[in-house]
Length: 275
Ligand code: ATR
Image 1 (spheres, helix red, strand yellow):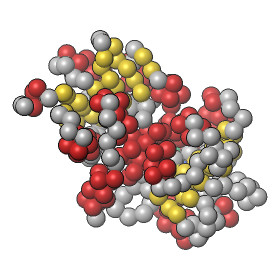
Image 2 (cartoon, rainbow, N blue to C red; image 1 turned 135 degrees about the vertical axis):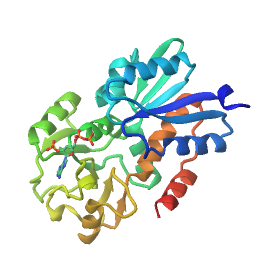
Image 3 (cartoon, helix red, strand yellow; image 1 turned 60 degrees about the vertical axis):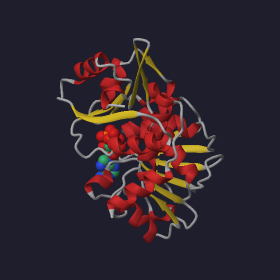
Image 4 (tube, rainbow, N blue to C red; image 1 turned 90 degrees about the horizontal axis):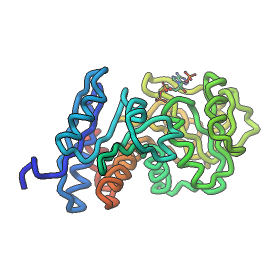
């Protein structure tokens, strides 16, 4: 089978050179005996809609969307899932029967990674740090796991408040970073971009107990500043966002191909490549 006759997929972004999505999807395809061709495409800042239209004309079947086009992808979609609508962003497009269907698999990717790491979500008390796009995208999928509460803490309190209002769920409440140490959490998720600039969200150290699981959506060659700090404070289980990256890709793959791929081999391969 030539590359042209394979079902075509893309990831659109700017920048895009660093994207591991083609590798991830080709491994999924190989393992699940699916024949696909998946390429990355650098798109001009004002060229997203045209890039999608051209790809549909070329018989493209679906695409992932990354920074800075996720909101534009939402606007371009003819149909949206509830989780994409509430995330306010689309990372997965499917081109079906002349329609553009938009979904957001980031939150489900996080949930799958937490469950894979045996983190209990039902009845748990979750502290979600950050109120930007990354935090917004995971709230609905986390709620589906029936936690006791999701407390959204943000440096700019008003943004956390605004975000919580959108969910109109008594389990989702907002606060600033000066969280009282009287609060106890089972899981703390860092959804701020602080790790990307080597910084820490300044939450009280007393919140970190040996049993609290600390998760950072960022990953890298070494542990993120938040996870290093959490370990220093005595947290026994810290997890970075590599599994979430692979998890969101696996959910996209299953939407497109109807097959749920195994994530473990891909996580191991990427972890190895980071070393
Ligand atoms: P993303 O899509 O990654 O969520 P974003 O929408 O720009 O990016 O949001 C970034 C988030 O990280 C915000 O919650 C931001 O806090 P503010 O709303 O107060 O700006 C948070 N953030 C970024 N740098 C931070 C830092 N050094 N400490 C704490 N929070 C930080």
